[in-house]
Length: 113
Image (cartoon, rainbow, N blue to C red; front, side):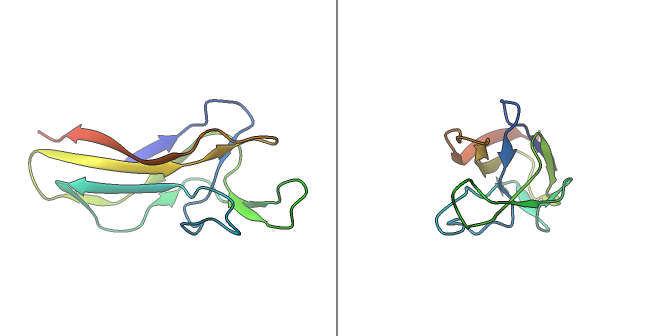
């Protein structure tokens, strides 16, 4: 399964899937992609872009982010039933001076039939 996350404003980046759940020093919203229902993940998600370390202005903390723009994630899955699955996503998008409202545990319903 593939999902592309595209910040809706130019110059915005997404945080890494490897960022800890609570961020680093409380900063950053990790990108998350999982499945429920009639799909089961058979591995961990991977991204089509490498991360880079970003140090927000005025801070000493470095955060792993993807380069500005869209990032496609691949999650290996297998279908375990015939009906429905949910894809659950979380992410935060930030630019140089501000961040957009983060999305946490947003459920996208899929019909598999």
